[in-house]
Image (cartoon, rainbow, N blue to C red; front, top):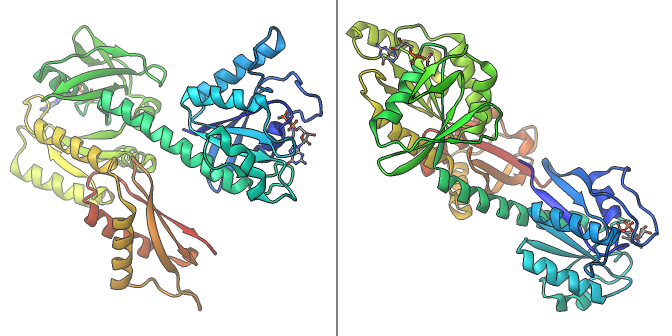
Length: 438
Ligand code: GDP
Ligand code: GDP
């Protein structure tokens, strides 16, 4: 989900010019008519590899009159409400105006994260240009020139940081309320519906349908041992009365949607069948999406000892690449192994959402490098300096340094293992990325 940044300011301060620079588009109007009517423009900007959405608002006239001005104000209000962060633009050439103060007051009340930007500052001394605007009480202003590009990069970086912080705070609230989102996936007849009924039926269930974000999927909230969970009902599972039944054909699309939407995926295998290509494909997609994963080997009841051993050997051979995940041998019909499975779901979720503090990440990195240096490539030896967390579910660790293009895949996996051990990240894929400064 891209963060959304809204550009707000009175007419003629340079919103469209900034919009065009950020989105590199030519389609927004730029003209010297104050109060020019226009609709909101949406475009995609990019900072490095991170995309974000920019919304250019019409000229904002806080003194609401009728007609056009009022409509623009409404549009702006809506854009602000939808934004994760707001870039509030003022004009260095004109200095502070009463309208700027009115807009500032309005923006402060919305509680949106704000970045104050003094535009048209080319050829002016930045420290002098911004002094005027401190009195708006919106913190340190950024001096930029939209027309020439000066100062734009740093300003956007700051605005995006605000936006990301806002995003993760909001998602955390949502997630806490709804609990872990679980998708139970697997081939037809492995026992998905049986497991769902076992999960919902054993404990006090407060199952109800919630409108889903994915078309055609239903969310069922339930509690187990006092903890909230949300089950994503897909892959052909449908509720009929009080029980789940596989009433549709297996749907690859729904399986993929459910995985993308879940926090934790429970991949169900059938102990009575060989592990197939399709099982491996589904698992591969889970990793690609970075979702946390728990494997349930179902129908473990009534199996002969030698069949069990043969299946375990097959698991090691065919699903070796899932060694970060926990395996559980369960029976959905006999209700065995269910509690430990749910426990692993909790653990995998905790690992996926783990907060990885920069000092500890950096210490782990430095110790790993001291223990084993990356190889030289020609004359250069990559220099790894520090690490910080770049995301959750999956956890992303970003390593900064020099000549990091020369890091081999083997070395990346070595670092990944070290981070996994230190932070006990079982049950979740982990991404390690490199950012070279030169
Ligand atoms: P908007 O009404 O806020 O969208 O403002 P525009 O982007 O249409 O710009 C209004 C005027 O300011 C235009 O004439 C732009 O060329 C000019 N302008 C925009 N950015 C800059 C800048 O960084 N420096 C200077 N000198 N002029 C600028
Ligand atoms: P789905 O298509 O993945 O939803 O699979 P179902 O839940 O409909 O189960 C398919 C068949 O496997 C049904 O006949 C179930 O009774 C049977 N089944 C499900 N779980 C178990 C289990 O743990 N042990 C055994 N022996 N059979 C099971």
